[in-house]
Structures are given as C-alpha cells and as structure tokens.
Image 1 (tube, rainbow, N blue to C red):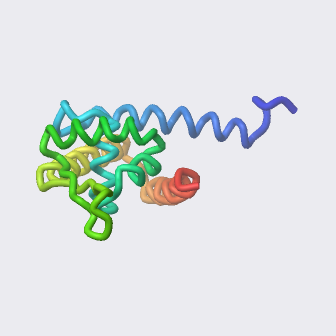
Image 2 (image 1 turned 120 degrees about the vertical axis):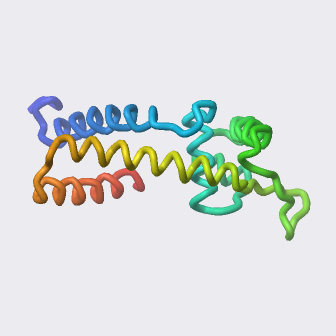
Length: 146
C-alpha cells in the first residue's frame, strides 16, 4: 500500500489542509493589523502563562533567543509588553504583558471566536455534527500539544 492509500496518511493530509485553511481565515480576524502573527503568539503566550524569561518565550514559540529578543523589543516599543528585572537574579529579565497587550489578545480572541461561530451558524450544523466537532477539537488539541 502506498503512502497515499494509507488511511492514516490520508487522514493526516485531510487534517493538515483543513487546519491550515481554517487557521488562515482566523488569522485575518485581528483587532490591530500592526500586530503580526508571531507577535500575537507571544502576547497570547504571556497572557496565558504570565511573566516569562526571553529564553522561556523563545523555547515555547520555537524560535531562537535573538529572534525573540527582537520580537520583544518591537512589542515593548508598541507598549504591549514590558521588561521586568527578575527579583531573584537581577541579571535576568522577564517579559510581562501590559494592559494594552492584554486588550489586544482579549479582543482578537473574541473576534476570532465570533467569526468561527458565525461560520458554524451559517453552515447550520446539527447538534450531532457540533458534538463531533467538539470531540475532534479535543483530539486535535492532543496532537497539537504533543
């Protein structure tokens, strides 16, 4: 059996295509068009996890520390994050989201959720189909968090 005929491979391909298309549509839903996807990901990470060291941020976002330093510098300049000296080790600097950064994350998430809810409503899914989507989303989270 070729890879294209393998049910697992076919499922992976279908899932990849659907996920990328949906993600692309949702990324267009922004409150602030000046905040790139990479910058938004950092803001969302800080919003969820609280203060983090630049190295921790880089690791979570799977980029190099110098790349994350540049991202943080841009977000500081825009007023979305601040640098805070570590209380235990003054040589280390933590990054913390500001109220303005939190507002961007909260409003963007609301806008994206509303856009997706509107799309689901327009498709007039049955309760059974919505339950399948909820179950699929739980499985997709498991794959994403692996």
